Length: 428
Image (tube, rainbow, N blue to C red; front, side, top):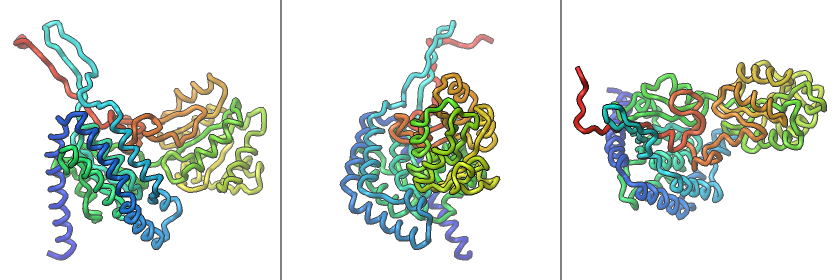
């Protein structure tokens, strides 16, 4: 057996063992009390805040490696931790603890004519596998949300964030230990071998119930192509803002700037600005100027280029492109119907917004744009579970089965039917 085969076999054995331990932990979590789960989350948050120096030291190793590898600025921004971001991660765990426990919620109940009493009740999914790249905060968000919903989690962070993820995971384990829950309820894959991802996608001999990828297009595409278990994911965040003829520019300009420039590397960042060419005023010029003055590269159609000499000509593939950088595509459209058609052709069913003061146009946009999140007069960067009141999110799903939009604690549950009788038998 050569070295590569031996490493592959070792990884497969390791991952099967992780899967087995996760399945055992899931059984314990399914009957854990709300108080136990909340205690684990609160203790983990305290451990995170106490371990700030260690987490920052670990993160510095990841940042140094990323800079040596000449990673782009947006990539490093996603990877970077500081005191404020670590405190936000810890607060996210506190917020998750404050959420209502979905497990055991009765969704519906009824009685049949034969006296059988039916209940549809929320229960955990079981074991969730999360595969992510340069986002160390996902370690805590995914682990915490899975725990609150009564699920065991198997976390496979990318090699570029491995040191940071290990340090954060240690705090989660400390929280589990304090609450007397299985430490294997949240496991971090200890190796960065890509073969570990392949094993997870196979399902670890039936241990994994669902996979959630968080990362770039290539990762998500691989997961969707190879997974043998259900997947909650979006492939790309090609988000649009359409500025209608009925818009208020005092709203449109700050919303567009925030949608694009608040954080350019997140999946909710606006990648394309559509402007109604029939506007009574020249909306295009001030919008384009604001973006350019904020340091954003604008690639536009002929009208956008005419509006400001700094605008570069858009290539055909700039529409429908996820830049994840301070770059935006701009196009003029012939009203709301044309905007909706453009989004249908180039969008990714993630998040799209309209800026308008016309209620009828807003409702038309809300009803006809087939995206997981559709907004009126608000930034696309609200595509985040925390902003929805979910405490945090494990990811954004653009599929239409089971979960769509931010995946929070409720989306990490399924249901079963409880049926109570008094001796009923079914007639022949």
